[in-house]
Amino acid sequence: MTVLAIISIGPGVTVQDLGRPGHIGSGLSRGGAADTLAVAEGAALLRQPVDLAVLEMSGFGGTFTASGPLRIALTGAPMRAAIDGVPVAWNASHLLPAGAVLSIGAVEAGVYGYLSVGGGIDTPPILGARAAHLAAGIGAPLQARQTLPIGPDHGGSTGMGLSVANRFSGGTARIIASLQTGIFPAREVLRFTETTFHRDARANRQGVRLMPEGQGFGLARGQTILSEVITAGDIQIPGDGAPYVLLPEAQTTGGYPRIGTVIPPDLPLLAQTPAGAALRFVFVTLDQALDMHRQDLLARKALASKCQPRLRDPAQIADLLSYQLISGMITGSEDT
Image 1 (spheres, rainbow, N blue to C red):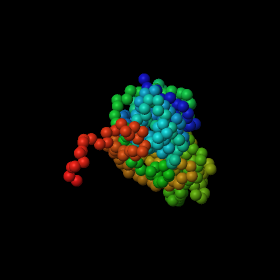
Image 2 (cartoon, rainbow, N blue to C red):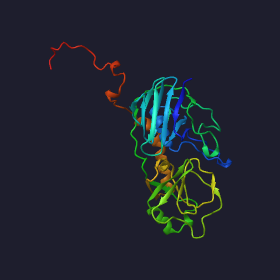
Image 3 (cartoon, rainbow, N blue to C red):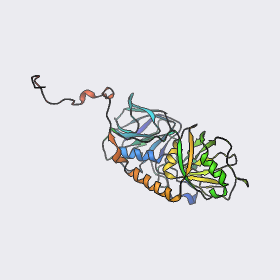
Image 4 (cartoon, rainbow, N blue to C red):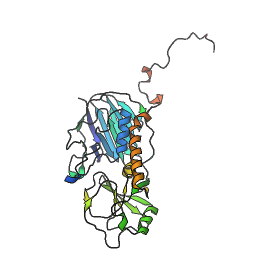
């Protein structure tokens, strides 16, 4: 069995997959990768199922080596990466030779970078998933000198690239009305959509805090409601009036009013917005949101067809002389 050995590692690297659906009634949110689109992109680059476990790197990666040759893909928030000191491209798949050192540095944009491997990270599943859920005490951030088992890889090409839209510097997220949108005054709801927010430095896998330009938001008759089920994407308004957008490890119930809910296709944008970046919100109808969700699912299924072979810089091909660049013979007297 091939293993991935951790030589050094950043403080926020965890094993993630698509999470654990179906446990909200027991008080456990789904969890899983903060940017599920990046997981789908890595799976497409490696031509493998999207539910295999990956490494999620929050802000910084680490250095790794494998006991055998390993196909890898780098997706999500771009980070500077190299194999044995030779830079490698992001949003692309590569071959990591046995014993070679993969180094992944600090994030250059966004928040969460992802390392996918051929065969997936094959740690023991807990409640049907391999994802660490830090808020629930399932799993923990990875440490140096750990080794991670790799599942069977059915093989495939590397050297593939994928063009992705920028979701790593803020933007506009689409939201639908929540159960409490109607209890906010109409002028406050309108002002919410006209306000530019900036992501606060206080954020984790449970959610991100947004600082509004101007005064905060609230209810004239108080900020608490009866506690009820909440989910990723909900936009809570706590007592200080600064919205808090819930992410995969959010609690399962809450008593703060929700002014809206980010639709699933835009959750990667929220998760990847770095501190200080601007965000705005626009309401869509439920029917529009459902259609957008269907289109997003179809686009994810089509990702593999969007992957293309990358053109490599000859100066960065360590074994260039082993390639047959010219074939056939000439005498020098051929017609030109």
